[in-house]
Length: 268
Image (tube, rainbow, N blue to C red; front, side, top):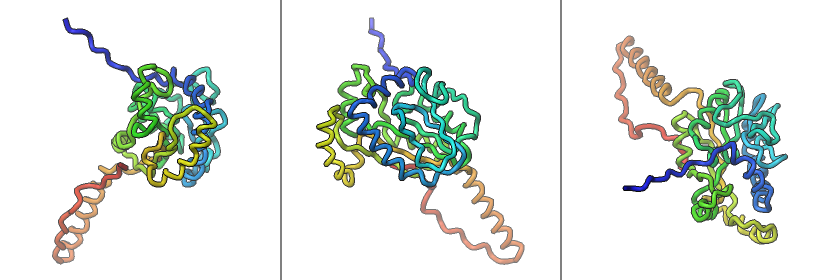
């Protein structure tokens, strides 16, 4: 009789929040938090609006959307953690089209249904709203430790580290345009303040080896006009131009043969 195959389930977001917050309180977590604060402070200058939503309050005092021009910042986290809203990321108790920006703080890494989480973020974002995603990079020293120690089922190494190109694919299905996608924190995952301080010299290598950073930051904009509508609009413009030439008795100029089948906005 054949044995039953065990399917490894993804971590549940609600259950992972408290252990993740404890990990971010460590020396390694605090070092990463400082880098995140520095990186995000210069990336959100084009985000303006009334309010934004940060999902995951893993580092008290770290507001991922602080660099944006928003009047109101809301925090959502699991019940029992400090937040403005307590709920599950798979079912946000937020009205549709009300958030100018949404920040995912390792949300996809520790979510058993990442597609639903993205759909919920898309629902609450306004037209031209931005989604900021922070996740662990599987192609890094963090990813190597994840592969070696995930069987212990300890956060953060038991998460599902998704590659950036895969997340970009998911966003393209929702008609999002990736504005920026880059990795950061090339230091190895060593939980020692003294060692991490000495390894700080490695940061200069990010200029050449930045793609191997332990974390990534992805910034994407919700497109008001989906690509399918853009193609229909362009075909309509072509048809009107042809009709105009026909009315004036002039010959319609030959349309040049396309050399590009479609525009690919995905970031690799």
